[in-house]
Length: 69
Image (cartoon, rainbow, N blue to C red; front, side, top):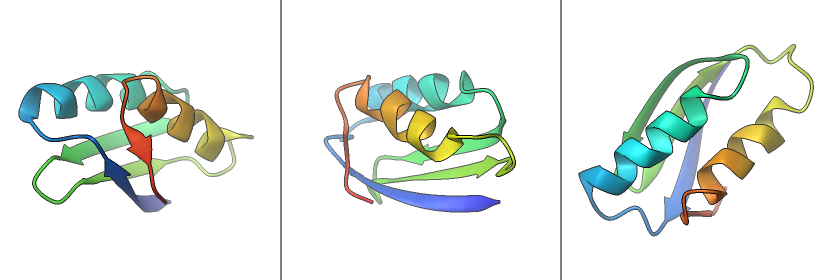
């Protein structure tokens, strides 16, 4: 499944790379593209992995970026 997550506080490539690394570390995530220009994170993941969407949102929040939805 692919999901587009809108965020606030990801203003530069350095922050985007931190978000990218944090989300890639979540089990079941297959691809991540964090785009600071669009304030969004595009994530491909295995939706059969229980609780993965909450884990992705937590990973993004752990970098100091706010998940908007």
